Image: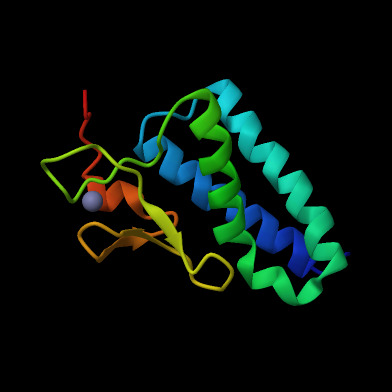
Amino acid sequence: MNPINPLEKALHAARALVLADLVAGQVAEADVVSLVEDSVVQRRWWVEQWPDGLDYVAGLVAQDVQDALLERYGRWPLCPVCGSGDPHALDVEPELGPDPHWVCHQAGVRVAAVGALGSATDGSPSS
Ligand SMILES: [Zn+2]
């Protein structure tokens, strides 16, 4: 019997949180899910080099996926708080720290924890 490896646990949690937010934004398609997998693989290596960063993995995976989506898909996640003006993406804060949240810098608000975007956006389609 192997004890649960903290690294595997953190990576699994990060993957689940970011996937939940992708589902909330209705962008959890197969190629998008593979972006999450790619990030988890890279962050596994990263945490092996720097074990103290274990708590930062969820925020980092969220930012990796956000960057990858920007190239392929566009801005994600779009801000659900600001009803008018140019559509803009939320940012992860802290960029390198535990307990990551999505924030809107235009409104200056914390929108939701990473993984809880669905409750902030009500799951309603934005198209
Ligand atoms: Zn906003």
